[in-house]
Image (cartoon, rainbow, N blue to C red; front, side, top):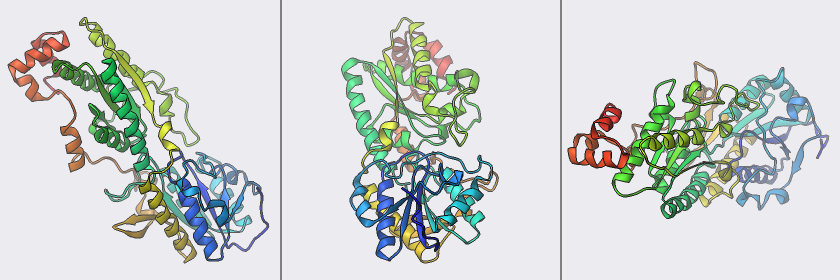
Length: 418
């Protein structure tokens, strides 16, 4: 790796940031092929902004068609990735711009989620026309501000892989008469948890969007899961699978979830949610509740997420990212800048960075699950949850009380106001 010495400003650089997502290599491939076909040159920039922010021009990879022609079906990232933050590094944005210009990069394609989109907008502003910047939206969280029916690339593959995992776990749950609490990735939103849970037919899926309060008590989540377990027991089933979005941990009162305030954070200041014991805390809480009523609850907590991020892309994502990469290259080569490339209604649409930003925070807006949508309503209808109708029917209530190891009155008091 190293600087090729070209200072014309005609090179196109590619940089990947944030967590891995299926399809990254497809974008790199499509961009490189299109640029090279049109007589341009491409520099792959490894490890996100790690080297650029240090002013290092040695860590670059000239890319040719022969380097990328068959990588579009592979998971991971040939350029690797990182979460190096520009805004948290003194003079970080200015140093990156200066380093890119010294490398002869006049066009930059960034690949990433909300943090990378924000970084791309900062670079575009600081470069002031000297570097054309185009962003390609990537995240298995599916939370960038795109139209409702337009996913970020990587989401469909992650959901597909997640459903395969959940289906196998559901069979294990049935075979062993136990419950599984699966914590799925999703920092701010529940797209992935809901998408996996709904498609797999999980017993229950819980996402942050369901709870509008700023601070959420752990007991409220535990109550919903306990109600589901009771309802399943009343029907003669002692097993189930609950999919919980990890982002719920950030909403929980810190006094309820040990380790939240002192948890390790990444380079962008985000709590490493995978290291918070949300699943274990819920498991222990539920076990204690049932043990107090003389019932042994067999329950296992498991995180799913890292298994999904570097999966080989499913055909949807493999085809999708070729469109996005082609569109990003063409847009930049034809003079476009300061925008995110999307595919909407079969057409490539460049969305200006300013339309992605939250006017209050100045950062990239987050697309939440619309709990008023048909998709969510259908998902909710097929979940096993205690409903008011269950408590209003005396026969059904008595059956639920027996399954819970308590009285009908106690059950009505505990769950009646929910």
